[in-house]
Length: 326
Image (cartoon, rainbow, N blue to C red):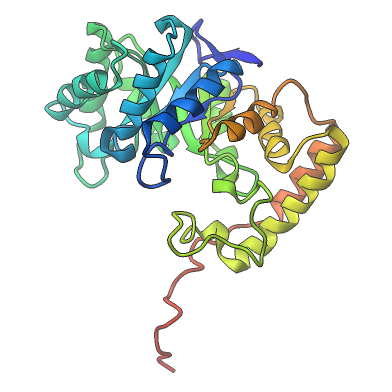
């Protein structure tokens, strides 16, 4: 495993993390022993950077991850765990209550990195107010470091300027080969300010793995089925990228998943992908994305191909079964 530093801190984290959204009803890993097996394999392979959130299974993900780490006998300072507080909770009354509960559910004594999950746009909580409320949790020892997930740069600036001593050390944004908007503002900002970027959906919810084809897309009951990436018109473009990943991967003895993750790591030193695994075998796939680097010409070929795979998010609108008004 390769390692890097978290933000401006001295914390040593693995170059590939493990997301834990899958430990919930949304993705189907609700049996604790299955979740534990995934965490165990991650630890065996040197992964020490884990991410969860309060809303993942309404606490089920935090519980499974924390319990697994405790039962597997990991020393507390050997792992770094981030969790996220939803925008709905970002007020000075809910913040301490929710975070104290999160600490109890995880059972790890404290939270290494607490990220605001998304801005409180529906409730209009002032940035200055929730920034200072979160910083107080650092001051009292419930949280070690702060972060932001899915925040635009303008709000990041407002949040950081509201802090007295702490700073933002970790971001979390959607970032993968066919969804690259984070490269426009977020990643340059993170590189300039030494902020680690946890890339969520780094293999586009499985679209880049080679498992799916234009003739075999996720079925209706699958959480992926409604994702625009898998709409047939979008996926035709994604599929061309997957074919290239397969071809290039053969030169390195790697599969499309490993090439897609390695491309992200090669692209920026601050990016740490956090794919979610539903089995120990998937964790092994992810771990195989590090310890090597794409050659410049292969990186460039993938870069050029992925830029042509523009995902259209309005593609499901309007419903196909609506009658024509013409």
